[in-house]
Length: 138
Image (cartoon, rainbow, N blue to C red; front, side):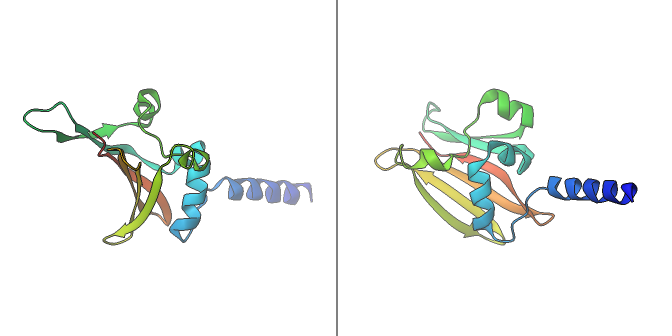
């Protein structure tokens, strides 16, 4: 009997340790936006990242970095997905749209500025993952 109880406890712990995999993107995004640890576990590394080099001559150009590891992302303090409580106070506008297939893009802009970030999400093994961050700000 003790063995059955132990197995039941172990099974329930391992089942709850599974990552949350929402079927719809909106439900997933609520979890993603509210928990930094959840963000890390639902980010594909190496993470594709690009930004605009405003100092490039003769005009700004997009620079892509394809090899950002999880450690590099944490150390470099790359732009993080804005937490829900910070969006309104800093006047960010959030737009969500779907690209081809099941690729969702969450775009953050700030009115009257050149601030614009895109966060791209795809589904892998029935779980949404952040796969790319594009910083279009100048």
